[in-house]
Image (tube, rainbow, N blue to C red; front, side, top):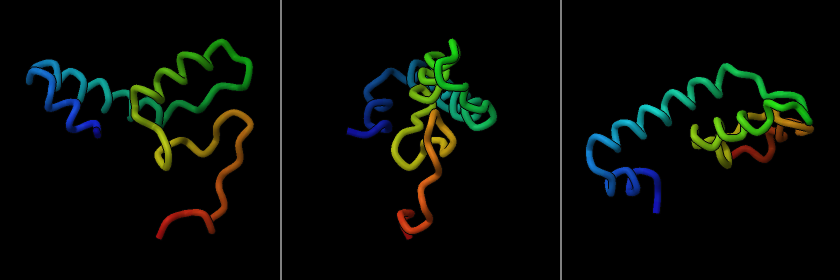
Length: 76
């Protein structure tokens, strides 16, 4: 079950609100740098990225103690 199927199950007004929350979270996550490891902002930032649906290939490269994946692992 994907996100569009879940949104179709909601009444129209609630689906619009959820779509706006996802879009605003995604835009915010793009411009807000991840906090340092151990920061109090780690939990709110994680919630923001979950709301923005940043999972899998959509995750930010520069996260806590992570390095960018090599170009060899990117899909073509």
